[in-house]
Image 1 (spheres, rainbow, N blue to C red):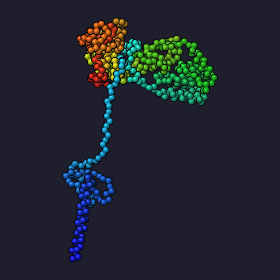
Image 2 (image 1 turned 45 degrees about the horizontal axis):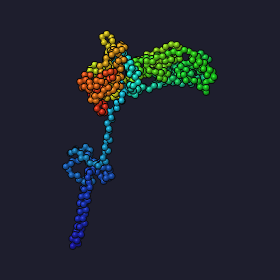
Image 3 (image 1 turned 180 degrees about the vertical axis):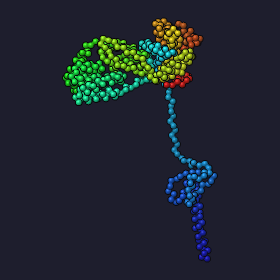
Length: 492
């Protein structure tokens, strides 16, 4: 009896325990969304979660027994790995990049290139380009592209050797060793003059001043006065500081200054190919080439000839009293400018000049330089050795051009002279632009200008009448991109 009573009392507890276990298992099955890594012992329960190396999708995910060992990494994989989806914050959308607008073409800026179709015509082409630009610039209403912006000048190079010699001379002078100081200052002055493009006029003047003071301290009065004269020629504003130099230096310097003022000045003439280069004397602009009759006191001068897009030419020139010093320079294009000139050469071939559309290089030149007009002159030499040129001008806004200009470089006047060609180019650049469909011209024969056959006869570009260039424009008010409609993909 007691045994049956005990069994009957314990049955509900066992059933409840069984139900509890089933409930926990069900909860565990519902809450488990990720496959758990196999743990080798109860101590592994504190480890971070590690995804399984491989799981067979067809096998049910069962709760691992605590006594099951971890599967080694070399176990055979039975199927592709199952990646558990992880909810993450959405990535921010990439910012929309606006396309850069096409470069605006300046209202009337002009780029001029003269190229040689034969190697022997290179010098003649350079001269023609300079002369044509000079003629157009003299009208005061033609705006050229800024090559200085497109090709900024190279920065001045340091002069470490000369600076070190100057510092050594100054140290010797301060230590009352005038002989050693004079030797160092002489060497420093020579080193400075060997770099005329980079030397500073005030530094050279200071060097000669210190040289004169050293020679005077050493008892060489004539040498001191000569050094002081060089200091004034190098930099006219040079003066001995009264706080550093005594009355003997002040007096000798004043005597050298008075003697220099008595000497007859000389003149400096500077030429360059191409023309239009800026001339610097003692680091200051004195004009543009061809430059004639610059009056200077006798002495040595650093002369620098520079033109945007070209390598600067520099020399140290001696100007004698009542004499004339000549500097002739041939400027070489910089690498970047050479690329533009090569493009201009391809745009100036006979085939390009005969084509109905502008060569792709024409648009590329305009875009690179920010020009509206591109003037091209192709120079060649005939069998008799005479130089001649074919000249065209493009308006990249209206896509019209002036063509048919032939120039004989030896001609002084007439329709084949450069003067006549410059007049026609100037009128093309600044003259009135008449739309084809407007029918309005300032001439009595305006009815003829309206005829389509007339524009076809002149190539659909421009015609000259009464000294005025009338251009048939196709500009419908659309935005202009110099490269649009021009195949080839020319870039610089």
